[in-house]
Length: 509
Image 1 (spheres, helix red, strand yellow):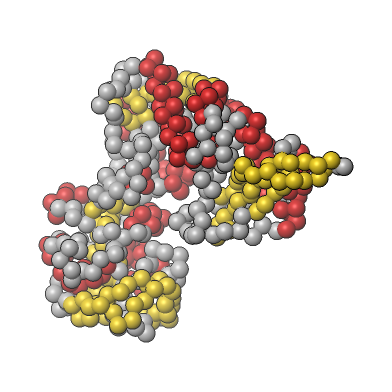
Image 2 (cartoon, rainbow, N blue to C red):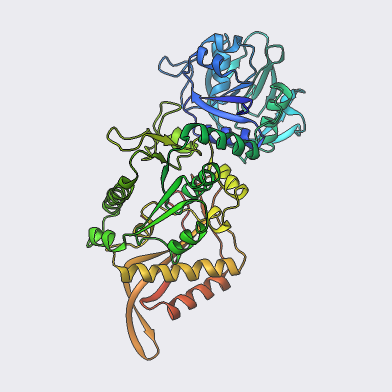
C-alpha cells in the first residue's frame, strides 16, 4: 500500500525562489508541492496540507492587477507562513495596510528579532536576513503583533499565534539569511506539527509500487542519454520491473571522452535491454558547416527525435518512460501557470504515438533528490555525480563548424582538464573546456605553429542562477596548460575564463 506523506503547499505569487522554498522544506524531511497562488480553496482542501507558504513576488499588493487571494485561505485552520510579498498579501487581505517604502531594502540587512515566537526558536536576536522589497506593512491586521524590525522596516515579521498565521518580510529560504532554514524548520515542526515522514527510502518503496500498478506486464522504452535524470530513471525502472525495460542510448558522437562506453558499461549486466545506436556519422553529416549555436541545437534535437523514433518503433504497444523532474514541470508552467521555459519532456505523449502511456518516476523530485535516489539505488558514482552537460553536448562547447577532428581535440583537452582537477582534489560546481574557432601563432621546438586557442571554465554556484569563477591555483592551471599543449595536437594556447554570471553565462554558447 502506498504511504501518503504530510504535505506543505507552496502557493506561488511570482517569486523567483519558489523552487528553493520547496527544496528547503524537503531538506527538512517534509514533502512540498508548488501550486499557483490562484489555486481554488476546494483544491487545497482536497490536498489537506499541514501548512501553506505564500511566496514572494514582483508586484505591489495594493495594485488592482497584482495577484490576490481570498480571506477564506486564512480561515481554513491550516498554518500559513507569508514570505515577502506573501507577508504583504496576508496583511492586505486581512485588513492591514501596505505602503511603498521610504527606503527600499535590498541585500543582506541587519535584523533584530524583538519577540519570542515559535518561528525564532534557536535563532539569535541580532541576525542578518536577505531583504528585497519596495513595499512594507505599515499597519498590521487586527490580532497580529510585530516580531522583528530592521533600521528601515518596522515590521520585518509578524504573527497571529492564535490563528497560526505567521509572516516574514525577508527570505528565509536563501543562504544569505542566517539560520533561514532553521526558521522554516521551526514553522514545520513547531507550528504545523510535522512528523518528518518524507525520505528517499519511502519514496523508493512507493514509486516502485506505483510503477508496477501502472505498467503491469507491458514493456517500457526509455531514451537514455547518460545524464543523471535518465540514468536514475532507468535504475528505478529496472528495480521495479526487471526485464520489462528497454533503454535506447543514442550515441550522437557529441559526448565527452569515453562517455558512451562508460554509460554502456554502467548498465551492463542489469535486468534490462540496452540498445546503443552509434549515430555519430549521421549527426556530423547534418551539422556539417553549421556554426550558429541555436541552429546546432535545433538540428541535434530534431535528429535525436528521428533516431529515437526509428528505434522505438520496434516496440509499439509499450509505455514511454521519461526522466522528467519537478523543476521541468514547474518551469513549463504546469503547476503555477507561469511558463519560465518550455521543456521538451513535459506535457504528455504526442497526439500521434505508438506508445500506450507515459511513465515518469522522477516527476516529483528536485535534482539533488534525484542524485540521492541514484546513490540509494547503487548507480555508478560517475553517473550520479556527473557534471552538468548541455543537451547538444560538445556541439556548443566547440565554437564554429564541427568536425570529428575538432571534437576529438576538445574531448582530449577536456579529459586532461577534468583529470588534473580531480587529482588536485578540487571540487567545483561545473568545469569544462571550450575549443574556440580562433587560431594563434605558437612555437613548438624550432617550428612555427598556427593552432587553436582552448578555453577553460570553472565556476562555483549553489543555484546556477548566479555563479563566480573558481580561483584555481596557478600550479594546477600550469599543469593543465602544459599537458594540453604537449599532449593534444592542434592546440597551441590555453586561456582561463574569469567572468562571473552575470554578466556571462556559464556555458559559452
